[in-house]
Image (tube, rainbow, N blue to C red):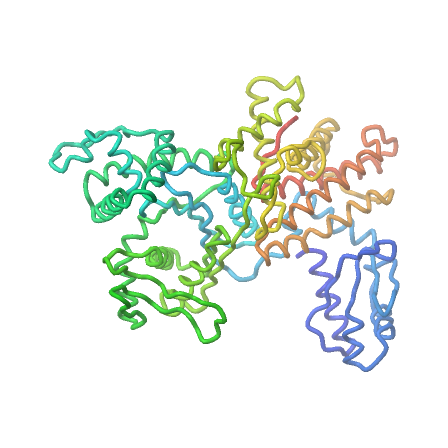
Length: 578
């Protein structure tokens, strides 16, 4: 249990023992540290309960506090300011030097959460928006830290109309391929007739033509329908498209340190859609409307329009909503999760709200199912509009990564050469991209400023990695012992770092509760900045007082391990030198 959590439980019991009815007594970070590093702000609310002056209540609480606090005082109408004693700080933080989980207040319930945060469309090039899979990956690691079992699924878009458009595009360019011969009876080729570059060219071209040519669009829809019904030629070609596209996408996800337990797609859910339709019909929640099968999910409490789920279209085709329900059906059947979290563009919120309601209303999942739509904003250029290439096209993610690498490379030390230089450049580029993406509030749009985010100084991923590298180098140079402890607090800068470390539990609890990474990113920057200030003000290597020096080294080890663990949660790699 963290120091803050333990202290809040102590305060709650203390206030209850004084005769007050209260559910919690939060320990709040002080905005005026000269009066105290934390505040206890319950006196005002308790004063109403007791019919007394808030300062009188505050004094009653202060008189009952034990020796864990120093610098105890009352300000204003009844704000109680406190600081932890040196002993309390050192005992707690020395226990945490090699035990980061000492900062984490783990969940007591055993939950299993399915995380859906990939969502790339097969045959389409990953664009800059796919960088946001970083959010899902970081939340996965955060939940694991709290003891939550997670099941991550990339969930490819591999089964809808785009597949028919791609196949038709290939057919127009290579009509003699055996996949398009209805009389072909041999074995289809084992090698793909298209590369990922081909797909990147064919899909947008075919998609554009579908919007302009109704005859062409109808043919693409017919191919999609035949593919889904099992046309052997189309199925064989589709498998090639999947393999080529997945290899490309997986390589990019791998570079971004985004991991998935399962590689399911819309096609995997398709085998359940008719089970879903039968299930919903049996539950009596469907109805016919103009030849289509729908399910109403609007409630009397809604003050906005919530369209019905489109289960089967009037032409007999299965709707996108049904495929989503098929995915939920499959996840409930295979994993029995306590929750399913979706990380995707804010604009899909209504679609997921509909399907969540459909699954709950029909009894497809337990009423306790924790569905969450965790929408995110867009990545914009300096003009405030969606990030594009110089010629105005959608920015491919691999191109953005390459631009960041090229921007960073000249700033790496000259004596770092060869494969090591490439490795350092690549890791710093991903650190810059990931930190920039994880820093803003999840739901907001943000501007990607390549000059700002590739800086080796300031609030950047590179600065955080640099701090970890600096401390690790120091510890190696001083041959730091494993059993060193912080035995004294020789100056205010040291105390500032130690107090900052006590804030971790609050920061991580807020991130866990709101499922966002912005608090963690802000915190690790503040911690790195405080440590670098300490490093500049204190000559650790040449400190003559052995006890002070050992305390400095132990503090450095604690900060390094803390930053290293936070970087791991953010899925950012460290480097040995830079």
